[in-house]
Length: 345
Ligand SMILES: [Zn+2]
Image 1 (cartoon, rainbow, N blue to C red):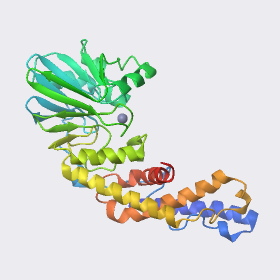
Image 2 (image 1 turned 120 degrees about the horizontal axis):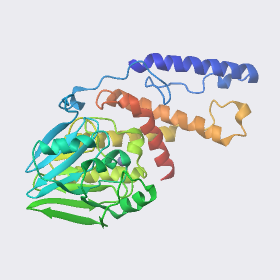
Image 3 (image 1 turned 135 degrees about the vertical axis):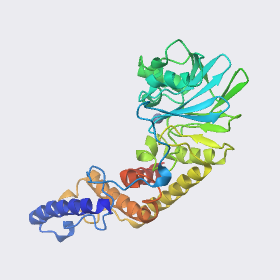
Image 4 (image 1 turned 90 degrees about the vertical axis):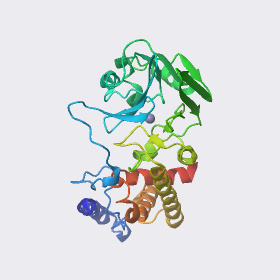
């Protein structure tokens, strides 16, 4: 396993530090504070080579000369991607609606549109307020009507970022955009990623776009894609799972998603929740602590939570390290996030 060398290096250093402490305290209990360390490298540890990406996580290649890939989703709807970020546009008889403009490639979106239409961009939909998904919107040119959920407006007012102009149309629960016979249904289902993050559904194409929740073929980005509310994040994965779409645009990775992808992520989340719950139930606080730290409750919790996370990573590694791309990159992050949510939410 790629992480194994690292783990040994990490363990060697721990033993060295522990050895110093043992000399000071003469206490054998601090010789190895974290037994059974996972083969997956812990946070902050550099490793020589991460686990290879499974074929199922790969998507069609991006033409390096173009810098983006255009995917026809049917009936005037297209995905644009650099195989890291994903956005969409919908062509109707008198214009184009753009959904998100990631700064990574937003300057290329007009070129992508020009491949299939000569119409101007008349509308922009913000999926949510995060700059990495909408901060390239000014590269689209013109003065499009911008639509977003009202929480997104609040967050963008606070951000006061000239690269993210404020939406002119906002809604609370639902908004349907009908233009020249084409339809986009926008809906808000609460804080699954951050307040204001919406579902964008194209009923004619059976395409659902929800950003930063499901990562087809991949481990979610660190700490469940920095979800503000982990139980809310879990609920939205299940909500997406139950809706009648055919193609999912998740905002990241190299391909669109299927129901099988959402089922797999849901299964992973059930497993990690169980692993963290078991680790919390089986781990005793205070074990292996240096007696000199007895008056430091923060250190006691740090030690306890580290051991819970290690137990959690160990429990999920055998099954998931080859099923989800980048399992090794964020396994520790997800376990820390999961155990924390189970303790306090
Ligand atoms: Zn985001």
